[in-house]
Amino acid sequence: MKPGFPRSLQSIIIVLVSIGLIALALGGYFTSATDWFSRLIVNMQTGVSARYMALVDFLTVPRDVASLRQQNSELEAEVARLQTQVIDLQQRVTETNILSALVNFARANPAYTYKAAAVIGRDPSPFLRYVIINTGSNDGIRSGMPVVTDQGLAGRVDAVLAEAARVQLITDPASVVNVRLQASNTDAQLVGSVTGDLSLDMISQDATVQIGDVVLTSGLGGGYPPNLLAGQVVSVRKLPTELFQQAALQPNVDFNRLQFVLVITNFNPVDITPLLATPGP
Amino acid sequence: MWASLVSIPVLGLAVMLQTTILSRINLLSGNADLILLILAAWALQERVKHAWVWALVAGVLIAYVSGLPWYIYLISYLTVVGVARLLTRSVWQAPLLAMFSVSLIGTLVLQMSTFVTLTLSQVQLSLGEVLAKIVLPSLLLNLLLAIPVHALIRDLAERLFPMEAEP
Image 1 (spheres, rainbow over the protein chains, first blue to last red):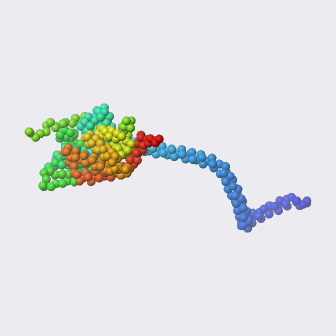
Image 2 (cartoon, each protein chain N blue to C red; image 1 turned 120 degrees about the vertical axis):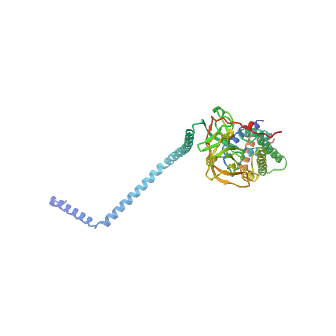
Image 3 (cartoon, chains in turn purple, cyan; image 1 turned 90 degrees about the horizontal axis):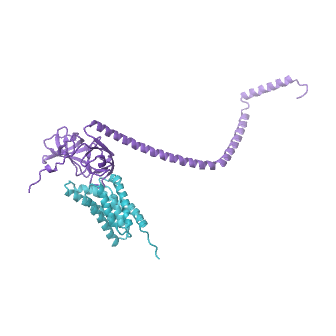
């Protein structure tokens, strides 16, 4: 600063120059210069930052990979555990729904006492329609007891062990159930087949059978209690040359997905075999 | 003799698998018979001596859970073992071909003896329906399952009867 140049004048000049520069900047006269400068700064900062991050990666990535792998395996194990839990819970929900339906059925039919059982196997022979249930004589199960689901008649106990029993389904080819067509109050026989289809036989030619007719057990013969739902008629075959009408039946129970059943434990089947007429000598 | 005792856990497990899983896997109305295939594969192993013991054990186990008369399975399984031993001792050197042959014969014997027995028991069965919906599908499933069962049983036999080192 030159001696004798008044200090206040210096300040005024600086303020004026500053105002002038600001005015020029606001007027856009320094745009190219500021752009060049800011680009330079940004490029420098980008370069420095990239090199710093590369250095950090170089120093830390090996340790992170190991920890990430460990974390990944832990998470995979957790996912597998949760998936197993989800499947287990879904299975329990399904079982609960089925058991709830069975309880409702038991409440709606209080005349009988029931023992619930899970289906744990099927007969190894494709000719037969038997299932194995996980209750036996230790739970009061006896041969001949009727077996139902919430949707109707399933079959009856054929053989009993201490902790398991074999149930002959009504779809078994050797199964014959005396039934009644509810609408016409006509007796018939419900027979199974090797394919699992059900059919009605021995229907009187005089009876009026219609598609959709409900079929219930009749109780005749003493093998099953009366009024258990068996299914609905889906087709009728009536030929004047035959003694009886026949009909195909759609069962209410899905026998391919049978999981739980109820055994009616207070029904004593009656063996009427000694009463049947036998041919004389 | 202890190799015969192995039949109890092996066939017990097979019966469990048969009743819980394979009996639910149906092709039309037929299903595979794991026990029959195990017996066929076991009896085809040259080093196995008492395959008929396995047939007896299998017959008893399966008769315990099945609604069929016990003698059907026993006779059929003994027939399977007999045919397999006959093929092993005589001409067959191709194990898989022999396995297929024994599976085919065994399936036919078992299914047809079941058909005859049920028919004699007054059960109404149609031969055409039985052939189309049970016998042929079961045969197909048994032939499909024959290869893996043969491989497994061959491994089991090699473990139970290891090759003796030649001097």
